[in-house]
Image (cartoon, rainbow, N blue to C red):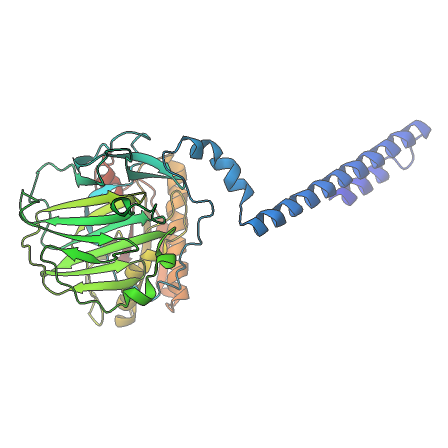
Length: 414
């Protein structure tokens, strides 16, 4: 580009006087100087990047997160590990429920405050900023409780859990701080009545006792926890937890692996849900949905469309999250079982942000879903895409669960 500019300047003043020739000389000198400065800056940038890479750092991320991290009550990871890939989740079979009745990522809460959409049933906890996310964490301190228990703030105190449901959330567990009662873990409570002391089952997630059950839960695990979920493979990483409950059976997934199948959950019916956090573990992106476990293998598809909430994306991006593979695998099964079927893939967002931006984003997400399905062996001629932005809500956008329902991908029969 610089050479073209220089040539243009030379051509336009080739017949100029001596004074113009002096101007040309100055222009040449300035271009050379700027080129040298750019080269010097590029070399410095390359050197800094090489140093950062050797030290396991990202200079842009470190600079942008300084002010946020300085305000955090808990330390963000120095070097976040690489997230799982779509390929890692290729055999994932978890399909979330089709109607979300509670969702929260704490984005509406302020740091240091109690979460607005939860009841603190036990202990002391608050919303903190961690790894660029709002999370719920235990409040530590001398004489503090060893765990904090959250229960969703629902219209009914009990009896809001449907007969079939799914639970999803993200958790991060650092190394133990050396005190047994403050080991980092996350636990789930499934209450059978209004008195959790008399009638509940729970499940704990920690490096030391992954999958430890108390109460009446009985498990039959196909996954070798001892060999595959060692401390170094579990701690200091984000994990996605998925749980499906149907017909008195519970399936529990850690990331892409189904780690437990509980053939009979003793506490019936399950009326309430709670989540417990201990030590320096944190949780976020919690979602409860009715239904789940859709099995379309070999079935003739006759419905007008499939509405999915299991295909999720990074915030304000079209990057598909790996845990979406369960739903994507289900769609592939539908298309393979119905070779004449064609779908229009419709992208929908909630009303957060500008409507024009949401329209563009929804189209990009629909395109990303098509590209992923094509990469999984589906003929692209069977798929079209369309983005609707926030123009077709199916729930009220004034609540977190309403927004979660509106963020969806629909497969419309054509």
